[in-house]
Each structure stands twice: as C-alpha cells, then as structure tokens.
Image (cartoon, rainbow, N blue to C red; front, side):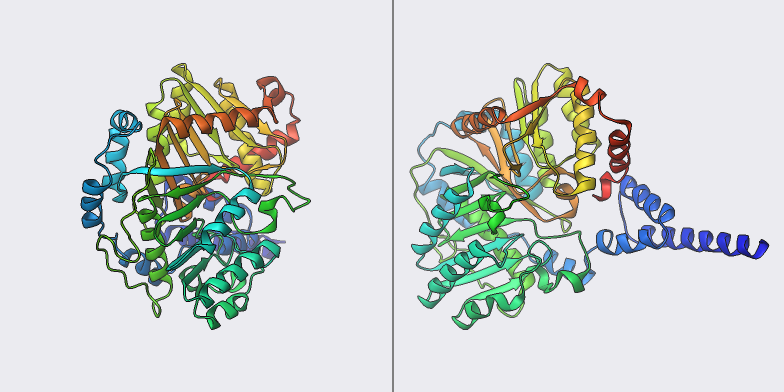
Length: 485
C-alpha cells in the first residue's frame, strides 16, 4: 500500500508541475491562468487533452505574419474623401459630435477612420442576405473578396462557390479566406476548380485541417465580403445551410448583417487585404493606396450613415471591440439593448452593465433559448441570472436560434458585427464590428429588438430562483471556466 501511495503522490506531483509549466510558459491574464490551473490539476490527462484543443496559442511565426501586415495607409484616401465626399452635412453629424470621444478612441486604438455618407441596410434573414449578396457579386467588374469563419460544403456553400467560379471565369479577381475549424468538413480541394479558373482560396494563416491544427482558439471569426471596393457586407451570418434555417437542430436562424455602400468599404477591404497577405505569402494583394485605385475607388454615395469598422484579435495588444462595447455602455443615459448568442462578459463589462442598471438605464439583453455549446450555454445562463438580479431584463429568444451580435444605445448609436459578448470574442478570436453613428439605423435596431421580444420569454428572478440545484451547479461550474470558453 505504501508503494501505491507513493505512486499516486508522484503522479499528482508530476501533474501539478506539468500544469504550472504549461500554463505559465505563455503570458495570460490572471483569470485565464487560474481557470487553466483548475482544469489541469483536477482533470489529469483529460485536462491536458482539453488544453491541446483550447489552450494553445498561435505559433509565433504566424502571429508575426499578422503583426507584420501593418495598418494600411489611408490618409490620402481620407483626405480626398473629406474634400469630395463629405462637404455636405448629414443627419448623422450631431450624433458623431456627441460621440466624438468614441470616434477618437477607435482612431487612436485601431486607426479606424470615421466614414461618412454611407448607405446601410440591415438584414436579419438569411434568404434576403444571400439574395442581395448574389445580386451584388453578379455585378462585380474587378474583384470579389470573401472571408468567413464558416464556409460549408453544402447547398448554399456550393451555390456561392459556383457564382464565384463564374466571376473568376469572367476575369474578375476572386479571393476566398475561410477558417478551417469553423468550416470543419470543408476540404481544401473544394476550391480547386475556382483556382483552375484563376481564383484564389486559402485557409486563414495556412491552416488546412482542423484536425491537424488541433487548436480551438485564435480562429478567424470575421465575416467580410467586399465587391469592387464599393459595396461590402459584414455581421453575424456565415455561409452554410443552417444560416438559412435548414437545420433541424436550430430551426429558424435569427442573425443580423449589414450591407454597406460607400467609403466604409475601404476599412473592410483593408482588413481583408491584411488577413490575406498574412495568409498567402506567395499570392499577395499588391495594392496601391492612391485615391481612385482599383481596391480603394472614390465612391460617391447618397447616404446618411457615419460608421467606423473596428477589428480586434490576439495580434493586437488592445481589445478594441470590447473597449467599444464599454464606451457604448458607459455613454448610455436612456437605454442599452444587447443581442448575443453568448453572454460571458469579463468583470469590466459586467461592472459597466451593473453601473448602467443602477443608474436607471433601461438595460435589456436577449440570448438564445437553446444551446449550441453546452458549457458555453450554462455559463451564459449563470451571467444572465446574475444580470437579472441587478434589474437587467433578460429575454430568451424562442423562435429559433439567436446568433445576432448587436448593441443599440439611446436610439442613437449601435454596433453590428461578428463579436459576441464573451471572453472568446474579446481576446481569443479575430473579429470585426461596425460601430454606427446614425439615429435612423439605431432606431431600426431598436425596432428589430422590439419585434424579437414578441418571440421571446422574459426571464424573471423567480424563474432563476426555481431552477434545480443541479442546473445551478452546472451553471456555477461552467462560470469557473469562463475565461477559457
């Protein structure tokens, strides 16, 4: 028995030492450090398998490639834009003036230029989105750039691919970036015919297989389409049949996307160029950043929306999109309405929401009524329960799966993009959001939220108090893993 005890103690000691070395060899915040120590210590062997999927960071050479792709120099484009496109005042000018601090913050943190006079359309249904996108791609004369977390080899995926092949055959420059983990099941050869026709396709940062990559974190979660540098799309939808409501598991898919016509397309274009050039070193986009260039044409659009496109990711030292969320929340005087499939905020965002609720601001958060990831959903329920105690209204969307990532504040400011309200989007994945300065679009976002309330159930504190002890235990346990979910 003494030998058994010695062996057990030796295993525990080795496991502890290995856990400490594994966690501390890479720089992390305190919360993530303790969460990983908890997992590795209490789940010997299994914890290390889990870490291999979730805990490992990007290889240094790939991170270097991303950092090397510096911000695009758009000063000359902006100078000409200000002279030719922004002389006339718009309805959004007062909103921009009132939120000048946020605009300045994004310029300093992410070099995100403030674009005016854009024409923006909000899209909440997959069928409408792909219809509009197909129409715009059909009209492309010079280039189509596509970047998605998910590009499935299913019916809509093949429909999109065939259209891109058609444009490539016509001589249009077609480039496709996809994430191998988010597009699991889609093989590299899926894009071979597009390549034969002169197009380009590559997995983000050259990772061809989700299996061999063996890494869940640091994924390309962005959704970007840019057509001729004039029209762009971004938001929450991906390319796959489930986003058209064809999945029995999820049913109707409720998401929010944006079609942008105007100079804001420059920012999405520049984001794509940086991601592409960091991925495919052999076929880079050799851009000329002069006004009127092929990739950044001067675009005169009769629109009224001012916005900034902001990106964030593990290659940045600043969590730009999270800072934007915090700025929106702290600026609210009347209302904050949020939609997110995941509600796993860090302490800074939680404190901001709590402060807003205590200040009498109408804070509402809408989440799905069903899970797509078990631990993530239980952690979401935990934070929803906490927010409800503070007087924040929590709604469960019942008509399908809610995947929208939106925020609207005081009916004046808004955000639409790929970033969820969680740790993963704040610091672990590559994201992109549009921050909007336009009362008309903000009020449209409010109208969408109100319509969704009619298909949702308000979660009361009594409902949470009546939950079983086992469900509450699963929520509490999942919350401990929040920094690594």
